[in-house]
Length: 269
Length: 278
Image (cartoon, rainbow over all chains, first blue to last red; front, side):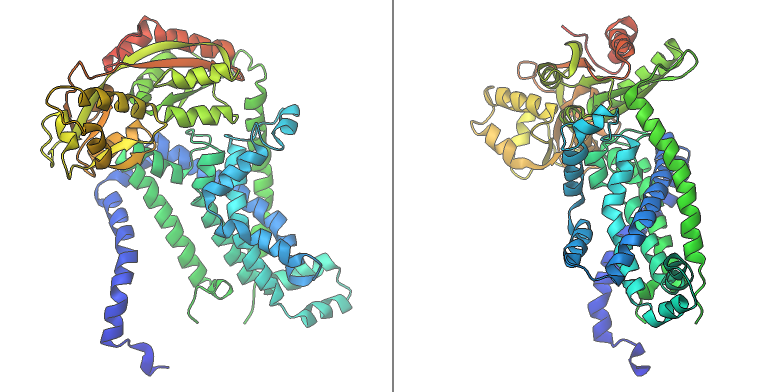
């Protein structure tokens, strides 16, 4: 084991190209944002700031929805075996492999003006597509599965005897979860929440299809990257992209430092 | 190994914070779609969906209009007119739709989604643009059909593409242009972008040798050089606007469109190279 920590020359030569290929584009992007002065300038730009505020607000809400509704579902999938549970698991996993543009189109066909529920929603005066609410729903749709998967695995790994011991001591089911299961599955829950949040922050395809691209209302940071690139302000595009790179980097670093990675299987050990 | 219950506490706190935030955001988006009486002191927000080529001009229009009509905020969203029309058809809460053609607003009128008729507010013409250093040495539109010239265009449904197709067809019939000009031009197209401004951006970045864009785009950009299309082959792009029937602010949207077609609006548009409607 210890002798194998130094890679041989040939192995290193085989791995270096891919590592460089993965790293260099991102490094160039961030370097250009900082050295070119675009990042400080764009942080004073209305478009980027509006998008940053919108991104932080909408991802906070979609994360809240994911935690509030995803935790019971993850518990159910981890602890109860029922007819159709594998079908539910497949449904939950589907958005992970589904192209986001497909998710956006599907949401529009269900909740849009001409969608399945559009007429009913209009009756109560609610029009969802192309609003901030649509941004939140798009994010929740694509990001919730990341939390549910991680939480399900974490909860399933908690020793049932420990939970039973608490029950014997008279703890109610909610208390068992609160004081035994959740703390023991804490790393998996936290890692799932962080990964889910970062997926929501990066959401693009479903958002632009279902929520459109209006500044201050539905234009999140990834949409600024796209719009300003198309709209000619490359500096703003690069600045918004850099913020997303730093956020993504922060997510991965925190997952490592706080030892949550085991739950996600993104750490070697 | 001890596991601290901090993540759960964090999760619970965030749910509370979020639940509070959710109610305000939800109320905000409902308020927009229901369009309750804003009251005398409320700021009225007018949402304008506009073709991408109008981006710079409308930024100036926004500033002037907000100064001229206090209490009004104009929010502008630009993209391909075809994309925006689809979004409006699907329920996007726009008050006004300003299109780079007449076809897309007319489609909304025919679908019963417009309040009143579409009205023309500007005209535009087309030009060839190349990066400032002109790497392919394009000297005339005829060079667009040369082998190994890379051209970016917009998607087939984008208005600029309809105009560009007419220009290419007219060029092909001019003396001095090869018989296979149309096919050779099409073969040189390496990308079809989402809207007219995305086409311009690719030329500014030097990622392609040439493109056909609006003269207003060429004028707005510092990174490109324009190569004139012979007047005989050029076409006139007529821009039309329409008030969206479900607009939260019908009267104010109509007033904005009238203002744009009036002397103040036309003065600003002319400053960006747009012509007066016929």
